[in-house]
Image (cartoon, rainbow over all chains, first blue to last red; front, side, top):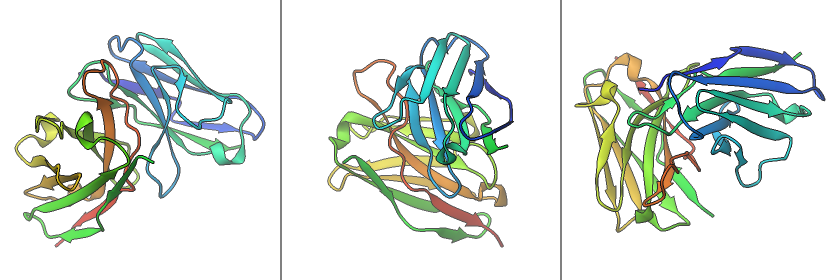
Amino acid sequence: EILMTQSPATLSVSPGERATLFCRASQSASSNLAWYQQKPGQAPRLLIYGASIRATGIPARFSGSGSGTEFTLTISTLQSEDFAVYYCQQYSSWPPFTFGQGTKLEIK
Amino acid sequence: QVQLVQSGAEVRKPGASVKISCKASGYNFTNYYIHWVRQAPGQGLQWMGVLNPGGGGTGYAKNFQGRVTLASDTSTSSLYMELSSLRPEDTAIYYCARGGEHGVADSNWFDPWGQGILVTVSS
């Protein structure tokens, strides 16, 4: 089973600034890594798949990078609607599919 | 558009079972895997299992093997998840989510997700 570890658990950033979130896999996930955004009371929404490909309708300020065991989600210029919880998920080796524990992005 | 619509909230007593549904629309139902994910209050996402609506094949997380059953009805494009021997710690929001397309390698990201169903287990 591939374990996913996200850091930091909470990230405080001011609107207009850049946010960088990290995700580490316990063994190689190749580029089979997705990022999701979840707002309170809502289902998760796909942001990134294939480690770096933006899903349909996702703004260009969201970007993903990395491969193997180290991955990054960057939000270049934070908007008020971006404050949420973000999860990474590997789909390289399954079952099981595994998620990170989440990073809460909060307003500083 | 591709959409997954789930049934309403459920309340059960410990030891009981619950069966929740997820209706798919907007795509070829049998061509894509469907996953079930749950989220306990204030917690993260936990993958439960996957179903191939086309062939009926399933895969389950070890934590749920023996307690969860996934099924589909191709005539109505509906998916079902039944969880038995419920415990208070099974209180959670349960999501269905569309996964990868059959025959397309490394495509099992989850998109879209259903709106989620709250299942409460309490005596």
